[in-house]
Image (cartoon, rainbow, N blue to C red; front, top):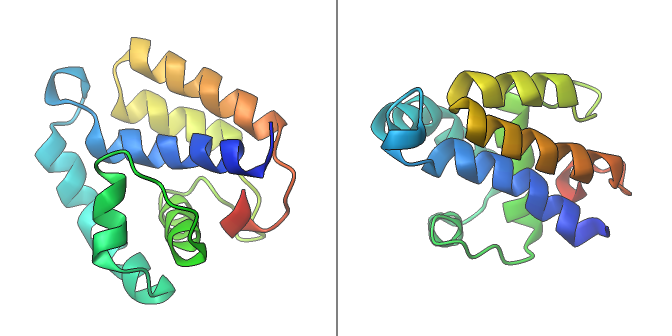
Length: 128
């Protein structure tokens, strides 16, 4: 798996955390969105990504854009799944999936993130 597919896997984790359906969430969608709003706003400011670009991801569109990639890296850091030395903490990512999602969905996300993690080729957190 190359750089882009792995980026998509990691972005999918964030996307699922933000966009999972109410019936599948341990937390309702409005609660998840509200919990992530301050971090999303902070990361938008920090990375300079446009709001319209972020909104496109809610529709499943993930353009290759450095600011957008760094925005998702910022979100992952805030979710405590990227260490201060900018390495993905797969165990923490799996714990977060278990906390946010029903077991069936969490298992799928953990399998996907495991595969992507094993294929990360960049040491730059914005490109993972």
